[in-house]
Image (cartoon, rainbow, N blue to C red; front, top):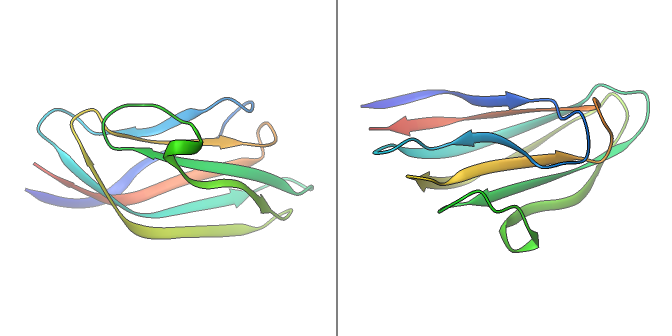
Length: 109
C-alpha cells in the first residue's frame, strides 16, 4: 500500500536533536518535503539529518547543517529521501521553541 501523508511534526524545546519520523518494521518511507517555520521574532538556525539505518545525527548524516532562517520566515527542503526499517529523519533548532518542522512524504508497506 502506498500512502502520502504528513510523516511528522516537531517544535524542539532546546538545541537537542529530535526525531521527527522513524520508519516502522516492513515499511519503506520516502520523505519529499521538510517545511521549517521560524515563528520567532529573531533569526535562528536549524539542522536536518537523515540516517537510513538508525538514529544517528552527526555531520555524517546531515542534509542541512547550520542553515540560517530569518524571523517569521519559512524555508523548504525538498528531495527524494527513502529509508526503511530503523531509518530516521531528525532535526535540531538553534533557538528553543522557535522553529517548527513538518515532514511530508509517503509510506509503502
